[in-house]
Length: 80
Image (cartoon, rainbow, N blue to C red; front, top):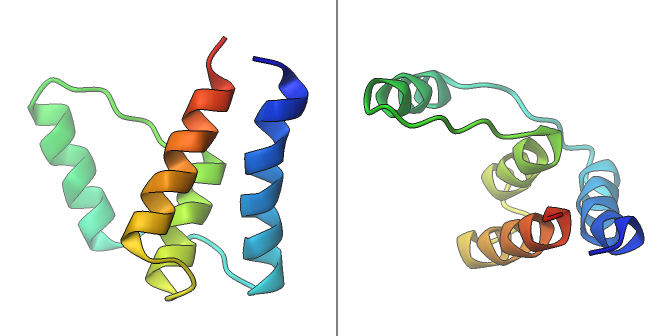
């Protein structure tokens, strides 16, 4: 997909975070999830945009369903 399309969802997520003054703060739960995933042999690395989605959901600005849909759209657009 084109880079313009990729930027649409990422820009929307960044704009939401800016509008609501939301930033990602790593929690103990995040660290635990990272270690469990690592020990299971999986490699999951969220980028800054995905961290912003987590922060927006935690702050109550997105429902779980909205966050998952935005992440799916973001990942689809990021595919080469």
